[in-house]
Image (cartoon, rainbow, N blue to C red):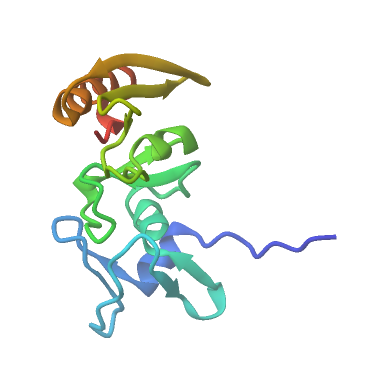
Length: 155
């Protein structure tokens, strides 16, 4: 049988930290500033350890986030309230950086020296065309990403 710790309540959290939505800074009541990234783990005594972005969501809404909390500007050090949003795992994936040797998302070089653009949408790869420059292929990907992923696109 797995035992889960009880969820920290928002009112208790507000006694343990002070959050400034305009700056994104999290402090203890003593004035100590806490780490400012999504991956930062914040220890709250007997209540356990939590990710900073999830604590900010609880602090501001009074409820634990039902999904991931992502960043509009893709900067995990920016914990300003206006920069945070809920995201599904797929939406989080849309915002990942390119992981290819060109460093351009959705673009790869073909054997003949051209560049092919493609995008993965709804469990299918869509071919966006072959281009003579990597810039043209990157623009094709960026246009498709904005169309399919909206505000979560990261070309």
